[in-house]
Image (cartoon, rainbow, N blue to C red; front, side):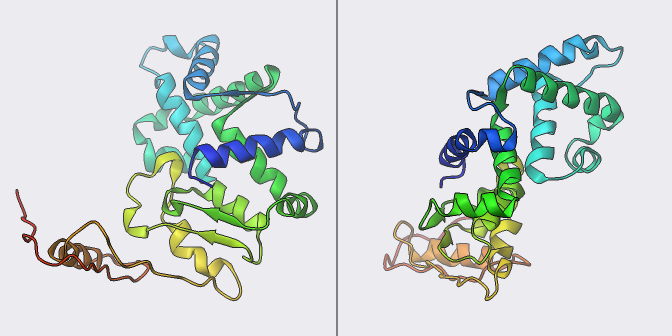
Length: 246
């Protein structure tokens, strides 16, 4: 499973197969990000939020707030305070907007990208359904695991509660983007999700950089207060040392 396309693609296929069991119409349409923003903007306009005396958050910001709340599995209050503090005064209106957005999607038999994960996670939380889904796969491997969010993690642990047949690949030191509420905690805490803990295999040989570059990289990474230990090395000796330019 890749972080975005494959994860969502498999989710869509499974939701169509289990649609009737989870209360969905299997003929649902999938909205991309632009379609979702347009729909939330329509609801925003219908509820009079596009003509407020002080400027209400744009459709893109509203969708970002909604998406982060879904993917991080956090309440709206927490999301606003931590990630969108300038929108905190609109908490009540945003909650009403999101309720209307969900109603509009249901009325139009539409799912957005966040729904593909949300419905999959909810379906997988039911043990019988999770076991039936898991039986479809001999092995599950997730790439770029440092860029996954809590919702994706909950899906994986539901499908493989004992960890058998599950492999994740990633680098905690490369968790820098946080797209869709991605959290480095997923990869840092992964081994301890299982009993016995998952085995960690460090891939330390680097084929691209020279030894001076990796020496600097190792020194910087070692300063992290929490990390999965690894020391990068290469057979490419020589090369100029890196420069610190300010």
